[in-house]
Length: 458
Ligand code: HEC
Ligand SMILES: [Cu+2]
Image 1 (tube, rainbow, N blue to C red):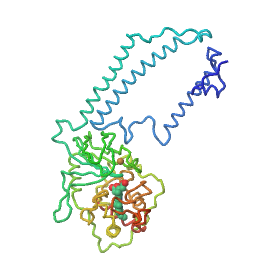
Image 2: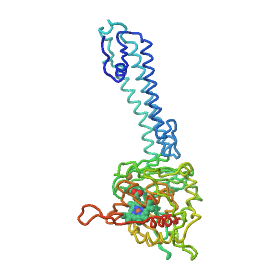
Image 3: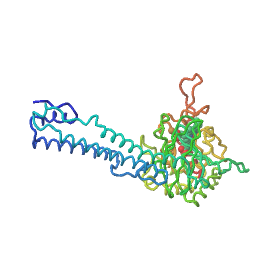
Image 4: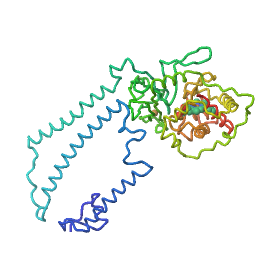
């Protein structure tokens, strides 16, 4: 009896001791059952894998879906993907059918067939070979025409909408995004100083309007991608790239850096929030203001209040977002725009002192609060954002404390921990150039006061 060749399928035969060929040309019941069992096991494996980690195999509308899209740029990219899939499917079916036909028609039916001469070969037949070349060229043309059209259409805002396009500059930093609204002015002090509006990690745009995004990088190459709206285009140091996006209607979208950029690349995320005209105008007006100042009244005490003192410690590796936010993010975002109800003015004032004392202002800007650092996210209206740390954590009290307690534990390589350029972070490089010494140490009270302060910045 001839041993089966050691292909993957034949391994099953060896394991099951069901050598099914060529001693027997009719499949036995035994080998049929074995074959079905293996197919079932493979299917069960796929289902099990799909079920792992709560990924629903049949759901296509996740936060970063490119299949369920919400804007014209992503739609054009999706159409292109579908066309390519159809062409591939046709090729697969044609080649598969020819292969199946040849395998069936020319199979060995008896022991004699095994040693027979091969059937006449089609090799060298000019008609077949030429038609195959023509078919391949046709398949390529079918894909190439819509691809060129797609590149042309999505490169920049369409001519007709260009006059009305909204302009924003996005800059990639290791590992967060800065957004600059050059056409908007924001206050720098009470005396009428002005600067372009800057925010971080959450890009708020007008819905139903084309947005041209100028892409820049502060350090290494990043890439800007909002799967449901469009992208991705690289953000390259010293090179001006652009990208165009449009959201069909108001919504909340997940974005992601799509070019490997170092330790925390995988958690370099951001959000895009599309608002209708009126709400967008309100947001711009709110953002132009100075950082909010909460004045302590004589009645409140400087000691942390109950709700903050009880602020629980997070567990290591716990999820950074809650289900409530995850299911209705736009609602969560809207709630964030107003000051919290049970604010503690004394605690907020204490937090402002802690911020000043610990040189947080070396890196961060809070307009109107003597903080003008430019190498880190602008915090002037930090309390009105739904996320922090490059879209990694939800901006609630527990997660914010988790971040300022030990940023390195949240994001590997973190610049807030190691410092940016000449600015020292939580640790400082030793003069010898080797190793680090602790630079910023916060007590539990400091952390609680900082949380209250940062969340008061609406
Ligand atoms: C060396 C500069 C530096 C110093 C000093 C610094 N930070 Fe940061 N901070 C950063 C950088 C960089 C990030 C962005 C990190 C990331 O997401 O990868 C950041 C992020 C943050 C964020 C999240 C912002 C957002 O929108 O995601 C908060 C809040 C924050 N820092 C608070 C503080 C506080 C409070 C202090 C002082 C105790 C401080 N930082 C000191 C550099 C600094
Ligand atoms: Cu990046």
